[in-house]
Image (cartoon, helix red, strand yellow):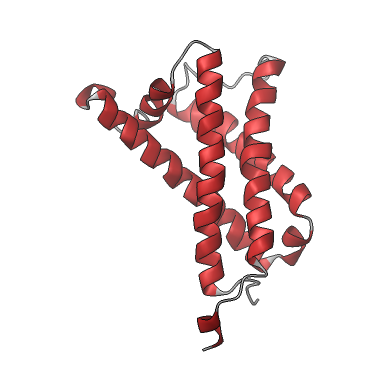
Length: 166
């Protein structure tokens, strides 16, 4: 099956989708942390602590690792969506619906698999979570991640580069 993107458009779309969705998502995490009495540095250190032992790193180094990990994860999220969208044309025909669906999938994977597996005491699988907490999580994953990635993917179908003709 032929891709609906040129090679350069796919790479450009991954970079743009990662930058936009990653920035929006981390800013929402910062805001939610501040609202809960935490800090942006604490958010980044928490993310970094997923892959390295926090006590082994100075706090700003751990925060930098967290920021890099956040954008690496977002790159994977954007890449997966764009690869599917490049092969399944219906995804790009309905970008809002597709973005909502992808955001829901990402939320489910993050809050029902990744976080409970990595931090079972901090993020237990709990179907009785507070509705406000779930609403904030869904907002971030749908409005700030899924939909922006879908809109970038849709736009990328129209990007053409002079060198693509060769």
